[in-house]
Image (cartoon, rainbow, N blue to C red; front, top):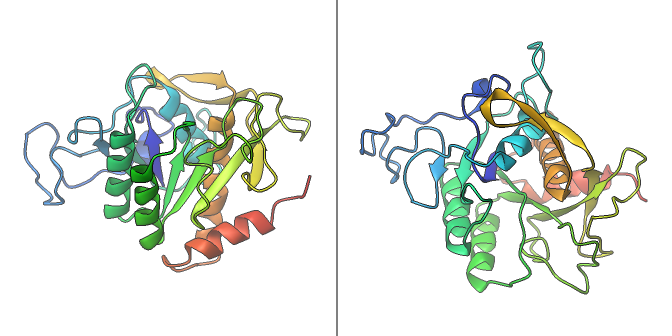
Length: 257
């Protein structure tokens, strides 16, 4: 599972065992594993194009715990797909801001490393043909993007948000629900633009410094669905080429509103 976000706290006790580690030696300025990236020991800092995807904001770490906080370890939280490996792909800085070019580089990196599900808890009202090309690149490599629908209380059928509003078959757009199983008041929605909803209101998960925090947003809902998609793919032993089948299974097993 690739987490395209602010990075991951790779030392967090509830995540460390699940963070993917490459063959690169850390901080030696070399591409030890010959994958085309320097010092990407624990994922990639796509802002710089080199170095690990260490989190300095907290958002990506929170998202990661929802997907794959380790289970049966008597610590913190348990993710929806808690045995999955997490690829840290940092494209947003310490203030939670990121560029389209860094997002594109992050998607390309995750695909090249062979990860078939990418969680994308971000969005922009600006439509980018270059970002769309990256989504198409992921689709060509049978990679599913699970995407947050946004937190503007708007119908994205009328007010698109990207990448959620791209119509590619490898996009799974996620709204946020409450503990009462209703749409969260902040969540975007859309009869055609949103595929499913998942819990996104007051979610307790991992945070920086080995800690935990409660956050709300479709950013929290998307990783629940990414984890479910991962479980669907692994339990049904779907081949790596079955991206559309994984998306379809995730949608078809959800409950209609």
